[in-house]
Length: 122
Image (tube, rainbow, N blue to C red; front, side):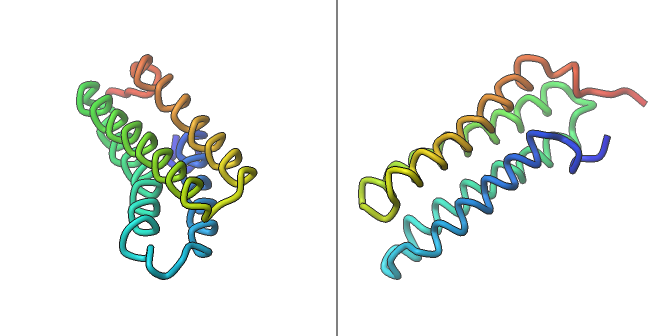
């Protein structure tokens, strides 16, 4: 199955794009701090999923990279909380992004608990 067909990859990619669009409205003084951190961590989720998927023949490496994706997902959630606390996003935006991030996190967690469903042997 191609990477692009994985639900977790598609949802992580969509989440990163959603976060990017929201972060365009952050103040300019946040460009090299909150905006940058949020964009990097949210994009890193799908990048780590892609790396993990390439390593799926090695279960420990696969789980390790998926764990990295999960950590980036958690980091993204923290930055979203900061954005809300700083009043850069509304309560509705917080709810939307929190839901997206948590959904991706749950999918990643499921994969980490069941890596054999994604491994292959040539």
